[in-house]
Image (cartoon, rainbow, N blue to C red; front, side, top):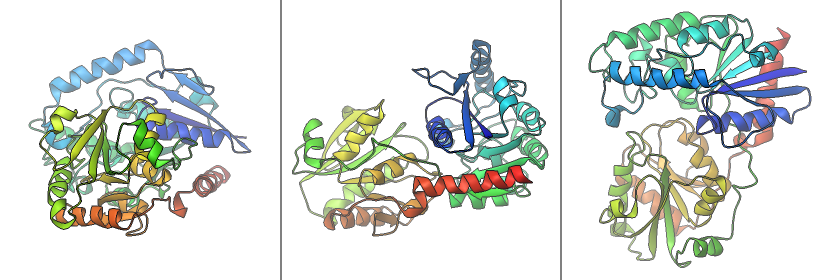
Length: 406
C-alpha cells in the first residue's frame, strides 16, 4: 500500500484541486490518501486532518508582520509572499505515515522555507505541486514579464524597499530544493517551461500533469431551464465572465470591457446579455458594457457555479497570466465553449475554433472576434482527451511507482 499525503492551506482554491486529487487516490487500488490542512472547512470529511489553533494564530500573526514589512502595489502585482512565521509539520502523524507527500499551496503563514526544509529532511518523497509561480521565484506568485527568477531576483520590480528579500528567498529555495527526494509537478506547460528556467528548480525533476478534475455537478445542463432559473430571457445569448476578484491584476477585466464594447461593430446583435459572477455588483457594472448585465456575486457552491455555466452560451477568460484556471475546465465540462488569450496554461485546454477560441495576448479585437466566432457557430465546449480523469491518474501512478521503486 502506497500512502499519500496532501498538504494544503485550505479547502478553497488550490485546496479544491488537492482534495480532488486526494479523492482520486483514495479510490485507487494499492493507494491510501490523507489531507492535512491549515484552515478548517465547513464540514468534517474522512481522511481530512487539521492543524491546531496555534498554527492558525501563527498564520494570522505572520500576515500582520508581512503586511508591515513587505510594501508593494498589490493592485498592480497581485500576491507576493515572504513567509516569516509558520508551523513545522515534519513530526506530524500524517507526515510520519506517508510515503509520498504532495505539497500544494502553503503560503500565508502556513509554512516557512525552513519548515519546508524540515519536511524535505524527513527523506520522504516530496512533490511540490505548483499552483502558481511562488515555488520558482523570489516571492511573487506571478512574475508577469519579469525573468529575474532565472538569474537572482536582485532587482525585484515589485518591492518598494527591502529588495534583497526576493534575492535571499530565491537563493534559499535553490538550496533547499536541491535534494534527491524533491520533485515538482506543473499543471500547465507554460509553468513547466518557467520552472525549467528558474535557478531554484532547473536541476530538479519537473513533470507536466494537469489538475485532476472529475465532477457529477459540472456537466451539460438544460440551457433554457438554467436561464429561467436565473431570471434570464432564454432568447438571449449569454456571455459569462467570473473571478473571485474581478479586478485582480491579472484577470484582464479591462480587456473584456474593451472587447465587448467593440463587439457591436462586428456582431450587431441586441440579444446579448452579460453574466458576471465573483466580485463586482451590477451597480459597479452599469455603463461599462453596451449590453444588459446580470451579476450573481460570489457563488459559494459548485451547484450555483454549474447553474451559471449552464445558463451561459460562452465563457470568456481574458487573463493576462494564469496557470491552469479551474473555471476553464468547469466551463468546458458543462459543454460551454471558452474564449481566452494565449497566455499561461489556457492554450493547454482550448483547441482553437474547436471547443473555444484562442485570441492573441492582450488583443481586444481578436478577443471580440473569438466571441463573435463562438456565438455565430453555436460552438460547444468539451474537455480534451489529455484532461480525462483516468489518464491523469495513470500519470500519477506511473510517477509514484517509479519513485518508490528506486
